[in-house]
Amino acid sequence: MMVYLALDFGGSAVKGAITDTHANIIEKFSLPSRVNSFDAWFALFDPIFAQLQQRYCIEGIAISACGAVEIEKGLVYGASSLRYIHGVDVKQLFSQRYHVPIEIENDACCAALAERSFGNQCDSTNICLVVIGSGVGGALILNGQLCKGHQLYGGEFGYAIINFENGSPQVVSELASTQALIVQAARALNIPRQSLNGKKVFELYNSGDTAIMAVVDKWVGYLATALFNLQYTLDPEYIVLGGGISQQPKLIPLIEDKFYQYTQAMPYCHITPQVVASKFGNDANLIGAVVHFIQRQSR
Image (cartoon, rainbow, N blue to C red; front, side, top):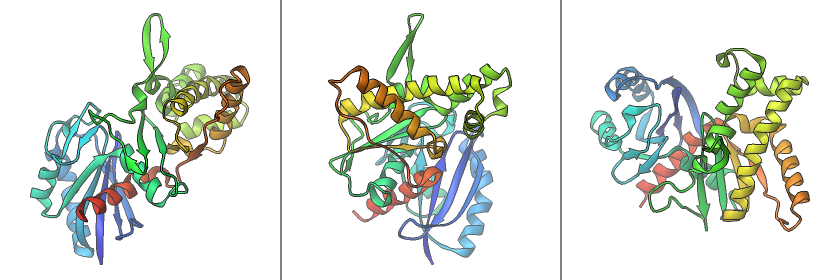
């Protein structure tokens, strides 16, 4: 059976999947990402790859990675907690070791490709994808094509400044990420932040915890402000939210409430952003990596 192997390098784990030629996921696995080098990571992955090769005919490896990705050279620019993926030819490392074609793309761009190809907004030609996680990332599809910008940072909405505190700029990733929500919630409850995640914070919100309700309201305000600004900068048909927290049923209604407050206060702002949750949730990067692989290999 002809399949593709997708790998999504995230801050806490590398998620993997075997997909068919239509990017349908057949099986999934994960392994740690926080190691000191690619050699250390390959030591973990080699036995998994060997087992998969015994069961499947792997046509290629599709990689999703955080950072600004130069897809021709296989280089990942920028900085992340996975220092070993930056500044090396990732495509060459994998192809020399596993002897199959390799393609790599930015994780948010992969998620956007998944939504554009198979999501609920696949008929839309102008989409902004905003991924909410340990930071805030994103990708732009304009006129049906990925728009990565002159320096490959197109869609990196997390760097946008939305507040000043004591003269210091604060960016979207600091204030509107899931990590930011967890930090503020833990502070409000006076508990270790390691004991919380985005899902638990919203469970407390839904239970009526007043301290958490105040934290979530402020956090949603930062996020809604960023999305509102994005709408009036790029005017997309849809803003698609990715990341695990995007699947919380209360999130989009809370954002829409903020939009209503903004348009009531500023009646000249007559366009309300259309915000939807990603169809594929945490699988979007894997699916989109395969879409990217197929597009590149069919050229």
